[in-house]
Image (cartoon, rainbow, N blue to C red; front, side, top):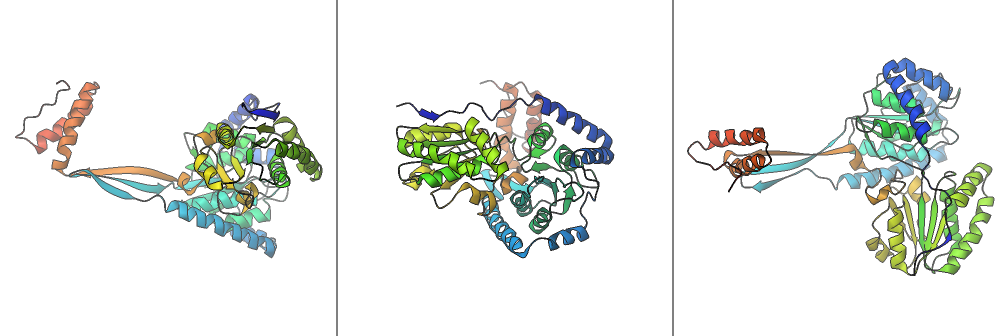
Length: 435
């Protein structure tokens, strides 16, 4: 049977970005031309902050003293988990060399980028976990210089918990500047910072657009849209847990899609009854976000069987994918398009967001069909090298000369010819592209 939509989204996560693009382009051009002074002008306008821009060691220590001991222990627990997972990821990439043909040796080398710029959202809430996810992975990768950038609160500065977290995780500098101006400062190397080679971390639509525009002159983790989550659930799932997980992700923002895909219609109907009740019980701001997200962007889909459920999930390519169903090994083997996968009721997206060790900076808006999330590998350049003996270069040079001539690239061919004449002066080679 075809997929049955018990609830269909009336809006999509894509919005008209033309005005955002113009605003961001103008700010970036102004700051690139005007340097530190221009960045400070925008900081005063948007951050409404005129305090210390680069945190001094004394300011960092003072902020750390304000963080309660219990929260420090939680931050350190999360940091240790993320660091351990990142170290295991790094171990999967190794330098190597191999003899391609006798006398020709080629190799791979993993080199971390020099400078990483880590954007940590601020504003109303302290996004502690974003500092852990971005700074820790950059540190494990081996970046020589790491800047953590976060919006300061008016007349207050960056939240102490963010400062403590960024410092604990290994940031070399902490920049009290938000939005496009913060991204620009890291990219253009303002305030004495090295120019960032890569920009990572979540942010609002202006931060995301700035990263998109700057991509090419710097690397970025990904082009991010609103966060999204999909739950796959069968008859064995607990409707209350499923509903709670959907609501927990809907509170991210008014345009954060959440999707339930199931082969059990009674479960779907019960979840649809429970979700509004759980939303009503949230604090006001969270409730407003979740209400709009559920009303306008959420979908509930009933499928014929688990194969159709898996195919549906792969079509959506969700950022977060939760499976609350029997035979978890089957789902792990079958599913192929997601940012991060949460198998079984005993884990949930919030665990990955905050403390379990996997990264929460993940592909959105279907990008999981072609890329994964932030990892230690994002900060590393996988480069290649080669060397050869004269004898080892012989057959490669012959093939190169002939292929190059067939392609009409005579200059390429002659770089091979000259070596053949020098290394093998007594041999008569056929270097034409024909016959």
